[in-house]
Image 1: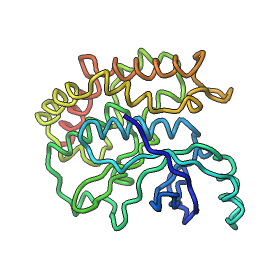
Image 2: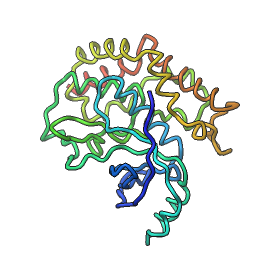
Image 3: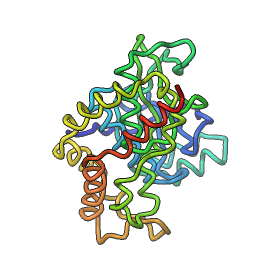
Length: 267
């Protein structure tokens, strides 16, 4: 398992949404990408969450635009008139993360679109597992492209890594915010239990560790700030992510039971 690396050649336009201040950029492979800046918002942790949650979703058979590493030259800032964008580009010089831009895609509309209950249950299960707080009716973070559902924007997932205190104990926690998930009303308690069994079997330790190994060492070391990983280096930080995600898969699944409880209360 590996990600491609491309180099940004042109800053096309900002996307004025979300804490990561993403932008559409053109790269040296002539592709267009939605770039997530390492120097924005939550810094590398948002990119780690984007990578881990996105590639876990892909491993589970859900559709996610291709994720790539993007080399960003600070010289690109010279052509931008907006001082905020200039500062963001300079602060993000080096390796960043991006998703393939899906031209002609439209944001998922829960009123206009009807999803299969199994697909909805898979997405709810994923987001409960990775504690993704950002898939609500206000901001669905899903696209319809070629009549298929694509998942985007997972930078707010895995919020446990913003403070590592008691992270092992917290891996067993429920996820109460699943009650606000835009697709929860499409699920049933029965479908969530069936999908839980299927997804748990599919998400093996080898897959989880292969995804974690994609994260660049430099993103795992921290910069001496509050909330940085309290470990001796990237290897120990990877092991901590692995331990959290694997323990979260151990029965019983409080995050699934919480989703079933929330769905039952909404009926």
